[in-house]
Length: 95
Image (cartoon, rainbow, N blue to C red):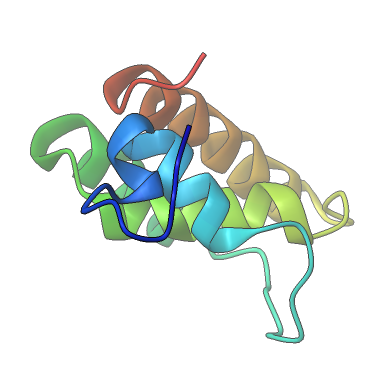
């Protein structure tokens, strides 16, 4: 059992993905927009090649906090962000 006197950090037991998910949460006042296709591709590449937590955070925010795309470009960019988010989940130990 965790007590305030422990040197244990609650995040120690979480995977990187779970800690990032906790950080982002499920509500935000920050305006999140669907990026361009080019930016979405860059974020995916950063996750694939550099295991970038910052890129993972960006795509997770897009997936969680933006509505479905209205234009074909927005739908494609959101699809790429969803792919990148799934990859981040795998790379960083999410379920």
